Length: 210
Image (tube, one colour):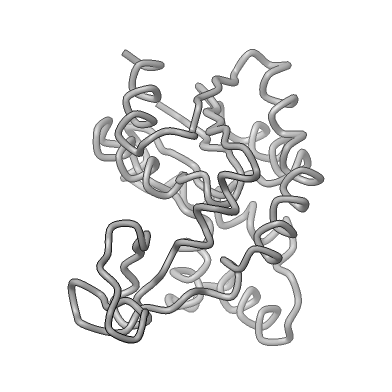
């Protein structure tokens, strides 16, 4: 099973990707995680990517595509894989389809106003990296929140602030949203209502395959 997970930032793709990968025993490939792994391993692609990042430049398509191609050639992808965060553009999608087949692209659809509301409530632990929604936490005396695992004070990430989230949604609409038409034209797209609980969204995704 070779899958792509699409959707706006804050749609819950990471959470659903983990559930899908576990249920169907396929590799979860996050381009962000993959990039960090390549840099840590000091592979040729990783060294080049780190050099660009250190200079404040974007990592070009050819490096990201090269990393994806290398990654899906690894043994744990023999049973299939789920791509999370890639492709982001039509050019990347065309390159991907040039070296591997795709069984389905699943788009988690969530209204912009729900995304902004969700992400404004998100907090992350700077120590253990666990992510929370403030709705499930009791506030501290100072109005802040503490990690349930390690006791570290939680923080709001800069890219979760409403104005930043709206900018990211605008970029998604401009650059990534056209991928929906790309995969729909190839009869590979399935849509899922993501404006529900995580369990309900997961059940909707599983129904697509079962």
